[in-house]
Image (cartoon, helix red, strand yellow):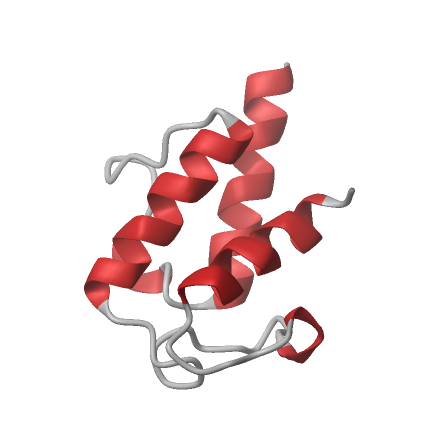
Length: 85
């Protein structure tokens, strides 16, 4: 399964609104569009870290941008590629 699909599943699992994965796109704002709060965002990060066996550290990531789907997905992709190399 594609990485982006897995990221979408994890996000939808924690969204306040009942949203289908197909409704997420690179412009989706997790807070504004999905009603994700800070606790849910932390749970999303934890789930992503466990799923992909990565560590999303504040030294390497701008946590203010993690509410943007594109940035979050790109971050996960980058960390997964780094892990594989």
